[in-house]
Length: 150
Image 1 (cartoon, helix red, strand yellow):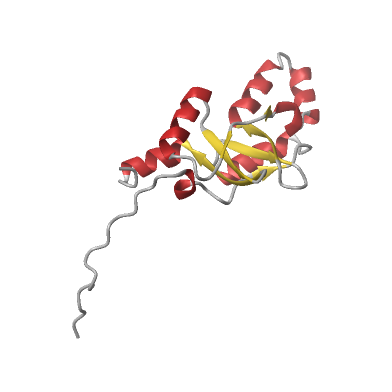
Image 2: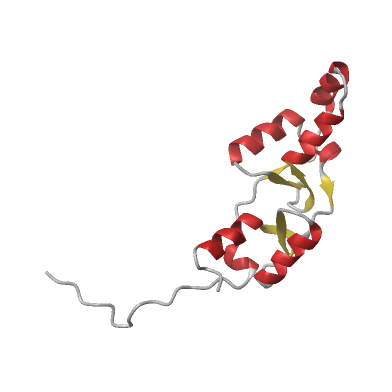
């Protein structure tokens, strides 16, 4: 049995143009009152370097990165202050408030520029005040390397 060729011819590759085309919609999130130990576990389990901090209604409050945790831990100069840090610090204590956000229809080049200007690795995507996704430098780099960006 033979198969007939696609009557429409070869399909043109889809070229990503907006944040919506590349964003991850399953965003790793954490509550602001979570302890530091949970932060470390969540970062390790999810294989991401930053986590969206959200309230009970799903609104974005901040972002917590692995760098934030490492910098805070490094500021504890002795064993006692380090122990106190690990015992009492929460996401709210360490998070960066007011992370950079964009809409899903933003042009990818503009998103890349905003990451550069803001010196950040990710932009959170909001629609109508709700978190709907995240796009990272890695997403844009991967799309470029695989030909999704023209």
